Amino acid sequence: MESYSQNSNKLDFQHEARILNGIWLITALGLVATAGLAWGAKYLEITATKYDSPPMYVAIGLLLLCMYGLSKDINKINAAIAGVIYLFLLSLVAIVVASLVPVYAIIIVFSTAGAMFLISMLAGLLFNVDPGSHRFIIMMTLTGLALVIIVNAALMSERPIWVISCLMIVLWSGIISHGRNKLLELAGKCHSEELWSPVRCAV
Image 1 (tube, rainbow, N blue to C red):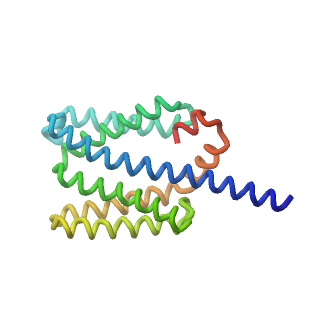
Image 2 (image 1 turned 180 degrees about the vertical axis):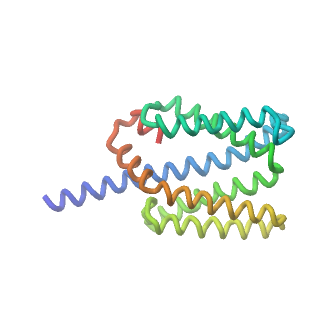
Image 3 (image 1 turned 90 degrees about the vertical axis):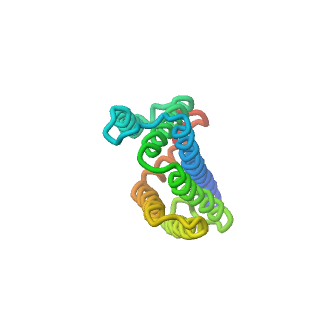
């Protein structure tokens, strides 16, 4: 009986770890996609020309509204709606940052952060590190900072890009550390739900 319980707990852990790794992968792809969308927005001139222009206020307002709604009703969202909202959020973020920062800086900063999630996820799988543990978050942060140093040194980036890149890594690490318990709770709940349930799809 005890052996069965241990096997069951191990399977639960593996499923939850797989879900968390999926979240890291989606986050990595989202960050890289944001950089691509920002380049597209700049190329197509879908950006606000001034910081205090109406399009900028509208974009930021919609972004905040979507994020608030997503955090309140995440359990009621199905796969299609979750996907649309995710793409909409990425597009809004891309438009806002493309209006504030040069595109090459956006590509460096967001791609580096995306690579941090991807490499950390792969390293976690390779070395069997719990993707929801403090150890994993520390590993992710160190990986991100190492990538910042390597990429910016190779490209001989200006000091502001170094600073923004470091802040981006620290910001994401802080968000994950702060929301770690919520992520673990969602991963556990997601595992117990049906494959196409709103919770599973939204996570």
